[in-house]
Length: 495
Image 1: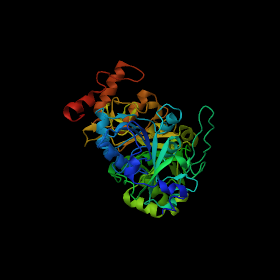
Image 2: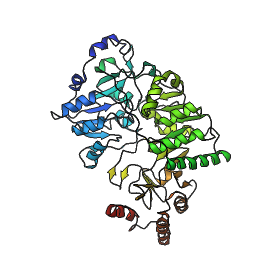
Image 3: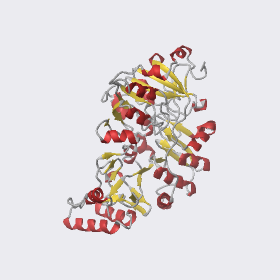
Image 4: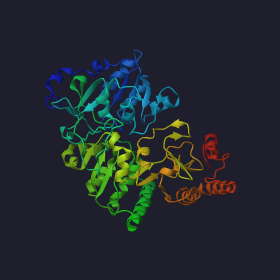
């Protein structure tokens, strides 16, 4: 039974229920689970673990690649099964517990988690729970729709539980390129010089004796929850398209541009979608997540190849891609996130990176994570990995939120994830500010003129002019810098 999925015969007696596999966990363990932006997450063992936690003291430190789907974080949080979480999340229930101080959250650059594991800076993984398409004849694990941190979790863990998902087509085998950097300080350069290059193997090679349990599942990934492009995101895409056309005309870019990276979310997905109607051809991607827009670009003939760490799609697109995986596989590759997000490769390939800002200030500092400077939203994700090392670092945002009650461009951000030094371009539906080669006072003029909503522009101009009267390389009025935020807290509007 399951001969095509468990090809190493001696592992077939490891098949058990999720309930039995959950008995392997102990209170206080560190657990690494597969899953990256709702893709390739385990579907059964986490739920069985939550059921145990409802009836006995059982809390874990949970590491993943990024966010989980299928309400896994929600169910585990409701069962009080998580004491510590890293490096990214997007669940509302878990978010509330984090902001109430009930769960300790480590917000990390996505390229760094396994680096810290490998060097002993984080507690070792006791159990890794990895979703798989199949197990090979040698006991190696073939991942599903993401790699994330799964490979290093499985390699470093004391025990491994494999969830084999029968929903995943066997055609996924060969999609992955598993390359694990060696230990410091004698590490060699990562030998990747183009997005389509393969430098590893198509499976996660581990000692099969570490596999303590195999659980059979048959459940799809959670669909992407991004919204379709709207008038404002189309305008953002249009401004970026015009800017890139000018870069090509000025011979700073070729018509194929540079490899593209796009963050997760509605705005980034919509902006990437705008490339379908652009004049650019023979595009390539080197990103962390492939969303619907990447598949649409492949289907349109605009995108030649895409490299990432996960595939996170709407339900219809997901079903279509899995049903035709042999058609898409020659133009896709999934890698460990420490490779997909590695600063060395970002700098070498010269990426054009497109990430979303929660808010930015008049000098180009970006807040990606904290509402009001205090309340965690999701996490920094991979944006910092890419922005610091990009050929061209672009941040996009709608100019207002909450139906105009919040300006996304403020005098001073309440939390800094990306400093002005890592931001080249800011785009809203109103326009684009090219910040390259500009001093702080010059950047402020461009951001206020081109990116700020007209309802807030006069007040921001007044703030900047008054701050300049007081002097400074980066002029600010410290007594007023957060006045907009406090006004929102008091009245429900920054106006």
